[in-house]
Structure formats: C-alpha cells, structure tokens
Length: 220
Image (tube, rainbow, N blue to C red):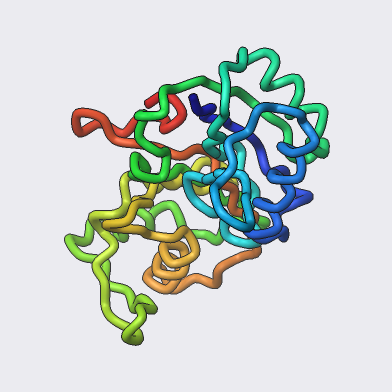
C-alpha cells in the first residue's frame, strides 16, 4: 500500500531546498517506526516521492508526497507516528491510503494554485491584468537546455486576478507545460510598465485533471 500525504512547508522554512526537505522527511520517516518500503541494492533508501518540488523561497500550504509502506497502516496511526517525528514547521494535514497500482501524484499533476501578497499595489495593476489576459498570445523568453527560446504562456494561465493586496494565480504545472509564477509576474509587470514590488509567493494547492476539469490532486 501507499499513503498519499498532504503537508505544509511553513514560511519559516521557505529557503530550505528540495533535497534538504527530502532528507528531513526521510529522517522523520525513519524515526517514526512505520513499516516503510525501501529500495533494493547496496544502498537501500526510502521510496519517497513528491508531487512537485517547491522553488527555494516559496512556502507551500498543501504539498503532496507519496510514502510506500510494507504493510497495512491505519491513517490515524500513520499521522500520529509521523507527526511526532516532524518539526512544527512541517505539519501534516491529511493522509489517504491507496493501492500500489494507484498512479503517482507526479504523473497526475496538471496545475498549481498560488498567491502573491504584495507589499504595495501599484496603481493601474488591476486594469493591466485585464489587458494582459486579453492577449491571444503572451510570449516570453524561457531558458531551455538549448538556450533561451520564446514560449507562449497564455494557454498555461488558468486564473489571474487581484484581490486587495493579493494576486491569485492558477498555472500549468506538468511534464508537458509549466508556467512558473515568477515568469508570469515578470511578464505581467513588464507589460503594465510597472515596477514589481516585493512580495511573498505561496503555493496553495496542487491540481490534477479529471474529465477535463482541474481538481485537487490530493483527492484523485
């Protein structure tokens, strides 16, 4: 069996990189005493996977990892044992057992929801968002293995709106297409001719796609 686990990476840990986060989770899992599944070979390791790495500097409200187990474990026991081994800034939110044949969260990933809290909102930003989204194409220069190349990110923007001092975004995040929030925001502020204010970007939720509809990945 496997556990699909939802956890938070609190703002205080936002500068911890993905490899450090993975090592912290592996240490906590070993301390938990849960019946974990390990890889074979000379250097066995926990077969732990994450749906999507977080960028350094970004907190995550509902991050997802998959923990393979050797035997049956009740959700309550899993949550209690792993929570006791984790630091306060990596709290567990939920866990759900699935069959080993269940698709990996990474394979189901389609998009992510973000918020960016601005220290100040430049005048004219709200109106600029409407004009920005009215474009049929939004071409940006994206870094690839073969160098910088133009890319149209308009089809990758599912939501972009301003409420008070907060920008809300839903952006493609998959093997086929990914639009990072920093790339979108730089394109938006360049288009609007506005200076980009300091802001804290948080990933709120990961989404999968079912029957053409984006849904919370943790429920798929």
